[in-house]
Length: 236
Image (cartoon, rainbow, N blue to C red):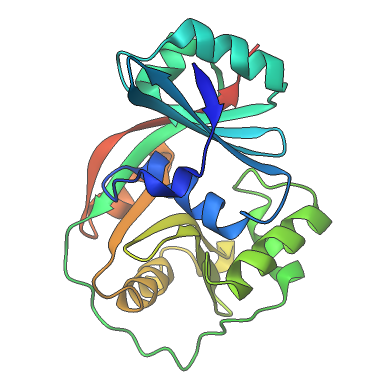
């Protein structure tokens, strides 16, 4: 059985998918385009789904009813599903991106932040990100990110060298969504400066990042350890 719930009640801060669902739920709880559901089997909550418009974030335990989940996703007409590798195989998700989930386990080196801007020109941010990351069209991207930053569910640091931001923040956790450095500034340590500045602002929080394979060694060398895999893709 799948039913709509106040999904913010059920969370572990040790699971990236649940952190993302919780952050989305808290951020957009007053908006109709944000919906939360759980699957219940024998009185136990075994799967959680957050819908933002036609995009779904899904966490499911191994004993979930995946046939019911498939039917439900089809009924909701989702365009994209973000889940772990195990769930993607069960649901036969066709990936647009795949990568790694990492958790920070080091000690951040505090960086001077006087050269960083916390409220940048979003057009500059968008142009920097669009070549290396999947981002929505400009107006939607700006509307969503600026709203999240304003309400504390994202953190964004920009300098003349690059940008880093978290897509999802909760009281105890933070998930890095993107780190980008201008091509002319790469291989100069600017990415590390941005990362350390971000980490120094997150004292006491669990810090996660999901990244594609090309960035895996960058994060591993800077104190992150692999915790799992993710898939972002379409359910057809």
